[in-house]
Image (cartoon, rainbow, N blue to C red; front, side, top):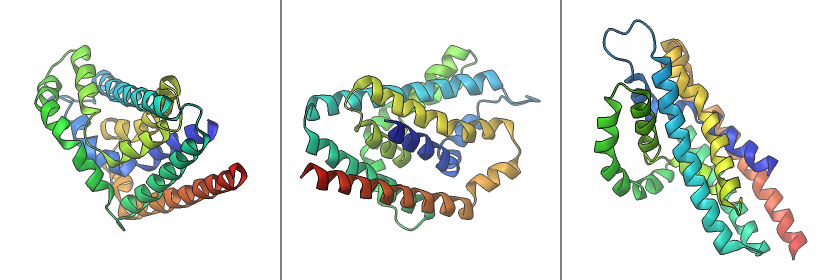
Length: 223
């Protein structure tokens, strides 16, 4: 469990540049014209809602894996191989070497098309609850990074642990999202830089290969 929590957190941290490109503009738009300082309360409320949706998605995936894989050892090993594949695919995505995850993002577009108008309307509100609700809807934005993290939630075998994995992932994405509202454009440029993304991509690939080797060893022991 500790390894999987670390992987989820690492995915969130490594995806800083991706988060800024996908959601950074949304976070930055929380400030109103004429604001002299970032609206910290609005930014925190928005991200709390976003992470809440990640945790809910993790709970749903954990519930599904619990129903399908309860007591089946080989099934969990297969899921670990799947999670390793997603890590490697995510690393290639970060580095700009392969964009297979974009096909997966397309699967979530029909749902997002239904949610987007309400999310955009809520984002224009002023109350913290409204910003929180906007964040819960934006949390369902089709994203290969989120889908990769959900592969780890599937390993959990329980709704509570699945939610915990996605909570760890959400906390990993938080620094990048807060950077959009609190830090200078220089830091944002670093996080978006191709060199940073490629370095994080290599890190994800190496970690994915390591997880695959561990799963392979477990498979040999199991057999």
